[in-house]
Image (cartoon, rainbow, N blue to C red):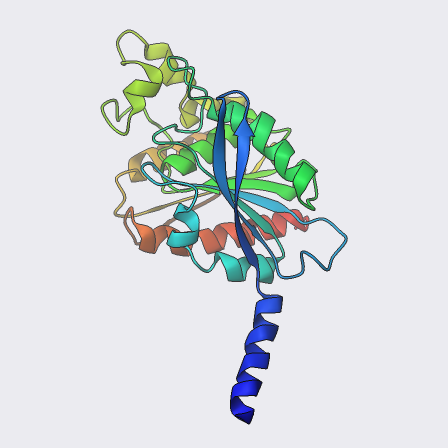
Length: 270
């Protein structure tokens, strides 16, 4: 009986110290619908009066707001360890996180920048300066994170991509891209305007702290290498890594830990 009581006390103490995972709904006025998000707050959230840095984690194509907590369950521990808030929004099915020029029901850049970030800062104890706000994602979400980060440098201080589709032009028939941009014949300029590798032209060195990685067996490896080379030619400082792995959960659930450490150093000014 004594050992049972001890176990229950220890379990209760662990629960009191553990991070909290909530699912919230944020109304998007631009798309006239509720959008679900997972929000992970660290163990000290209720105790501290000061704000926390925020990392936005974007899921891949065919996934949803719950994707990251399933792909990387260690995020609960990481929130405690690094003292960060994680926000995992639903990016829709094949949104690519931009405002579609051909489908007005897809306005995910507007949602992320004009609606979600202000909502999080208004409802959570955040550090609302760009220095303490980062964004990364996997696959479609890697594209989205860099696209949003580059185009909204006043919002994010750091941006990353894990196995990201950082140049969508080589994949015209894949992943609902034609539905969001039109075909590559009639709407070629849409494809030029909505791909990360071209958005990078807007960068000046020091605008963003950038971390990009991709697996050696990933079908997006070539476009990641091309983006890396472009950033090198532009003299844009960035952290770029290739490591063994494919386009799968095993790779990105490992890679996200490196991104979070990179962001942590950025938040601390290192």
